[in-house]
Length: 198
Length: 198
DNA sequence: AAAAAATTGTTGCAAAAGCCACAAAAATTA
DNA sequence: TAATTTTTGTGGCTTTTGCAACAATTTTTT
Image (cartoon, rainbow over all chains, first blue to last red; front, side, top):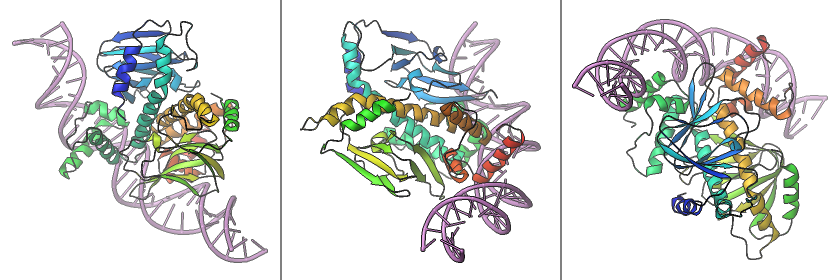
């Protein structure tokens, strides 16, 4: 699971200047990218934190995904026929690697070290992405607010291997992340506390 | 998106006998595998159709995922700390390739052609998996039954590029797939029809 | 072809979740 | 530090969803 050491090495390896790679910095609150035109964009969050956001036509905000260090995102991961306006917002200051993905096995003409190392680490990155998504599906497929909360708290505690958890969101954002109404969620949190569940 | 030709080739390539690979056939209704012990199992559905199922402690069945030809599944895609009983059930007769995944770059001693081709196609398979999962998250994050249904129908019609859709599930299963109550879903389907939405 | 099992269509009622609104508190910005 | 914005906590009311139940089909099995 922990591939941070492996990734550190990877990051060092691509500090050369490959023409297909760009690294940009973003301040908290800035838009990192929008998923509109299909440009086969593939991104790696090098540090910081960002969210993938959707607003539906009721005006509801949903936090589709929450990205942390070395998480991958971008339009490559969405089907061509997506009719949604999705965008990635920096939750904290962050640094993002952008790469135009055609075929993982195509190297640039320079045959630079970035491409070699990307190919080596690509599967690991994608596998990590899938595991995250499966956890996400696990949460969202829970039938009621209470179960979503319990699942989410268990997830947090299993990540830190600790009984005390720290929610990385405000309650407002947590509700948007679990795709539920905030006031209804507050009610349920209160009842979990009353029953000494957490 | 369509990688079926590529896959056909792949399938042909591993008809040799690699010691780490097993291909098994299952009849409709049989259990393909259960996600209990972490055995780093990686599977490819060669043909047929299968579901990933969870029963929660209320007895609710949820169809976490629905797998079709060349979809990948298995324990590798789940975090080690999964406390869920998940199992894969054959919805139709199917053939499944099992492979114990350690590191995609480890070849077996024989240096057989399976491993070479798997490495070549692995990213494509994973990317496909991610796209499926993102569509799944898209559906499940919708706030109400009506929107889930509309999203799902749109998805189907965009897949076939047609206005008439065929739901690959019974209504009973569709409800389990969308993680909602069947009778409530029937009510909403009826109202969509009344409003000539579909 | 008959019997058994599963799906569909439909209710009334109960429970859960959503919506709106507002004051208090906390965090952020000027 | 003061002003402004965001978050939290809460409640009343409405709407949606879930539950249980059952007859009518349809499908599958014997």
